[in-house]
Length: 247
Length: 335
Image 1 (cartoon, helix red, strand yellow):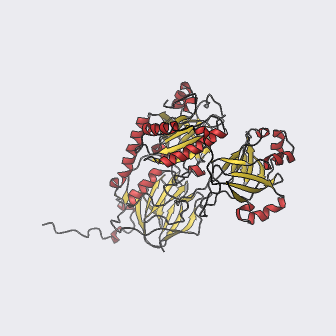
Image 2: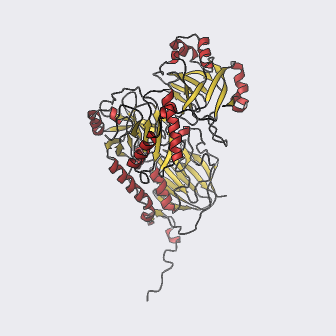
Image 3: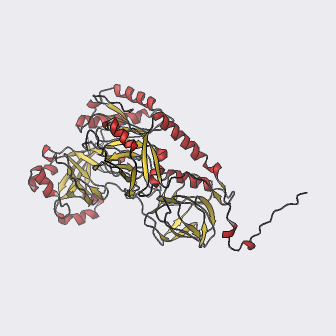
């Protein structure tokens, strides 16, 4: 196999015909997440001829390129040279990030798995709501569906597994939890994540001049509101959410 | 008005184009036509650009009334088609006159048929593309009663109907595969067995991907299922919880947590997209050099399609009112 296996990170792997993945870890960590974001920024600045697209996942930077314009061998050389330029694990986050405050109905008929998730985490429902509402989480990556954030990191109690069976469908704006992360859904889809909160926040607005609301690095607080407010929030700009710039 | 009126239509008929690459970082997969080769075949038949939008018909077509004279081409999975009840050829271009009805039925084999229109479909452009992306909530399938507008033709050159012999890809086949992120998690014996296995395309499949059933035991990686979610792209072969492979297509998500045993070459994606339920699929790992040569050849073949189009000769027995045609006009004195 062509895959290069090294014990240490960063690790470069071939991803099919036109992809390369640079991984900074094999499990989620803050330094690896920041390294992936910073490396993507550097790749985009470098703007190599033949590079088509660059994105990040939790701890990796993905590069898609046109192998007829930039060979696998050459892009590996470019990547290795860039990797050596600094210690990517020491990278700090970009400035110009946003802190969003998103009103959230926890539990009730709108988010039926709060009780179940809290029990698995060994918390009461009110403790569960408190720990989540009091944690300022960060967008670690956007993925799976358009504009959809993976947010973390929650306290250790929330290191709960995904369900083995899928929930047939969660609605747009569903706040879900597993493995010390939150996912806020941008589409209505089946999922193995437990549905603990419901927001009126639309993450992806294809008809709008700014279709994507969150970017990796943005931070979010989900603050509790009463079920009765959800209808009103649905009518509000950004579902009642607001943001400030992080300085 | 340069448009079709949609009289009736199947459930999975959507406007598509070459897709929206470049939004992986924001969670949006490229989408676009499921069978990219068909996009090029239709463009060749109409002698127009493959960047123009087309109508993709999943399994079933529809009835379209022409509100003006218009050229069309039909490609992809063969479907029965007729103009005002008169049967017409698939993998061919035709002229519809104003007021006539084009009827397209259920696929004979394969999954996705395409209706290409001279001037291309006109529809809303979202994030640089016209393709309906159902998983992302961009656009909607066509509905009966709506108008489907199309652009003006750039040239009024040769208008005769044409036909094209196309690559047979309606009943499965062998797919060429390159290693991907977790290929090395599968030992050599498992990889060898993967290549020896005949898979059957499951009934579960759509534009997001298709599930394949092995004719023997399923497949497991050394790392089990505890994989950190990573970027996924069309062509990736995920090994799901029950050990069966799931091949991702154009409308897949952008991250996934299942281990990937490999990735299908872009040139072979039309074969898996068009493989009907129950058809046989096999995988063969190729080297990077083989893959690059295969993709080069594919690009050359795509660009050569226009030159392969031939005039469509109709069987005289199928022509109504044959005697009404002026069959011998233009004969010159041969002295």
